[in-house]
Image (cartoon, rainbow, N blue to C red; front, top):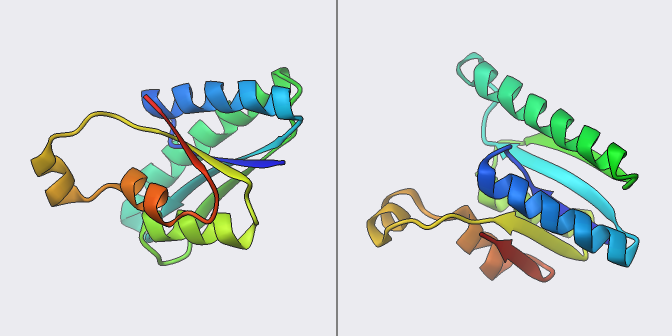
Length: 130
């Protein structure tokens, strides 16, 4: 089984990772830690470094838990929500686990919702964790 965890290192993502770890142990699954950026320009270098650090830290946690894993920082010119759905489709993921946080209706309207896009468009079940 292949479980994709959308991971940025935020509190909600760490909670989602802990849930994915429990599921991976129960289902003997491999975890794919995935983050996405639309561009990889010089302006985003700090963000890229932060994401790489977060992915590495999560990967070390999975090694301690003896769970097989891969990390992927996607910079493919797509919006993160489209990129994550496309990656899940390409890799034939069995499940996507995402952390969510409460946002106002105005916040969702102005900034969109990657979680909402994933829930509606992913090729597999999406488990949301708050």
